[in-house]
Length: 222
Image 1 (cartoon, rainbow, N blue to C red):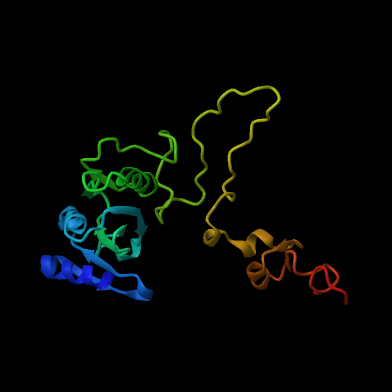
Image 2 (image 1 turned 120 degrees about the horizontal axis):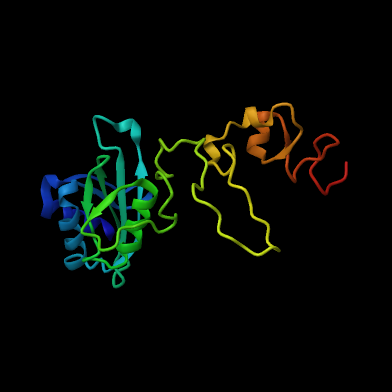
């Protein structure tokens, strides 16, 4: 049924609907950035998409300079028909999108999180500030060019009681995205129990599924 909504969008907005997809049952449309707000209003008023579900972004720096690097994704639903659609658009680094708060109030926090994590600004947002990180945080950590060696926080710790120890900041090799950690180098020369996937790559022992005696599953008899 959600395909009908996508068809209505294509009929109403013509070539400003740049692409449609129903991959794995998820009906979506990619629209021109200058049609972002107009299409959103149409989805709510004419297609009954009255529930804001989610909003996020994805960074594709390899698209530049031919295409904008950021893709903003909106998920909405009709509470009367249970139809769900995704609306997408691409945004150049440094460019803005109009806020969707006048359409769905729930877009408030979604847009703030996108700004916080990716640095994308939403024109007309009444209170566009960080929502997960503190104001002194430098950079936007879900951008693919955020340096892995960057150490946060960059502000002094608050005073605490004598009974609570203050933790040091993360080191340069801690708290990093799984896929960006150099596991071969980190585990070189060590005998560690690690996840099965890393164990296969590095020759380490699988945590909870291998014994140090030679490979039998934990909790089983040889």
